[in-house]
Length: 216
Image (cartoon, rainbow, N blue to C red; front, top):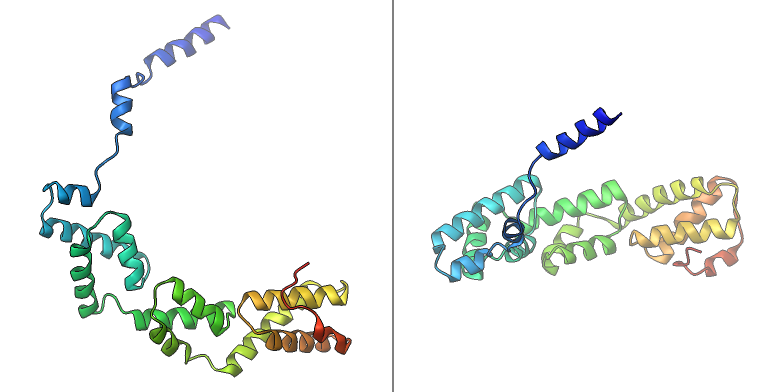
C-alpha cells in the first residue's frame, strides 16, 4: 500500500511543473484588440482589411448573415468602421452579402419548418438588422391561406398532446402556443376550435372569450 502511495506521489512530482506567478500573469494579460493595434500603428488599413475579410468568410461559410449582423460581429472584434464599411460594400457588390435573399430564406424556412406567422418572422428579421422594406418584400411570399394552414397544423399537434385534459386548459395552452408563433387571436382560436371539432368536441362558444396569451 505504501509503495502504491509513494508511486502516485512520484508521479505527481514528475508532472508538469506549476506555472510561476509571472507566467500566470502573462496568460491573464489581455490581448490588444484590432482597433488598438490599428490605432497604435501595428496594423495598416490593408492588413486590418485582410484580417476582417478572412473573418467574414469564416462567418459566411458557417451560415448566411445579414449585412448588419456581419457589421456587429466585426465591431465586437474591434475592427474600425473605416475598415468594415468598404469591405461590406465590396461583399455586397460581389453578392456574398445579400439581405434580400437572406430575408427570403429566413421567411421561407421559419414559416415552412416552424409554422411562424408573418408577424413573428418580421420581428426576427428586424432583430437581424433587415430593413423594413426588404423584410416586407420577403414576407409577400407568405399568403394568408398559408398562415391559416400552418396554424391549423400547429393546433392539431398541440391539441393531440393534451387529449384527455380539461377542455378550457387545452384551449388556453394551444392558443398561447400559436400566439407565440405570431398568429393572431382570431386565427389561433379558429384553428384550435377546428382541431377540437375534428376530435368530436364542438365545445362552448364562450371559449371565444378566453384570453389568448394565458398559458396557465
